Length: 77
Image 1 (tube, helix red, strand yellow):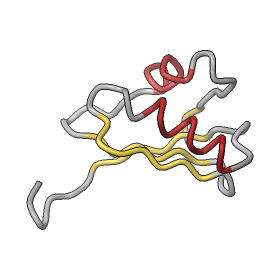
Image 2 (image 1 turned 60 degrees about the horizontal axis):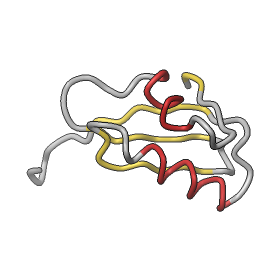
Image 3 (image 1 turned 60 degrees about the vertical axis):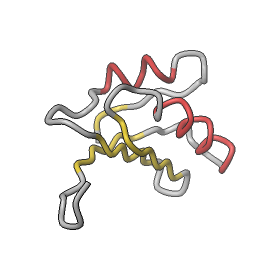
Image 4 (image 1 turned 90 degrees about the vertical axis):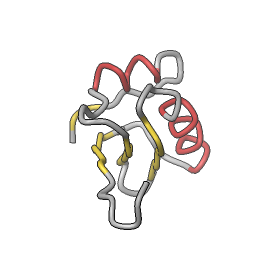
């Protein structure tokens, strides 16, 4: 990645995220999505930001598949 390369990102809302433990569970699960280069979850804003490579961002279905069994559901921000 070059010095001036724009980072592509997409945001999702995760209403059930309430604490740092939630943030870590969501981050760990969503970093496994193909193309995701970084995940940042914030329980204060209840937002999940995914940085990705390529021209197509991860969609809400991919995020929710990654979150299956964790008790969280993402919606489009």
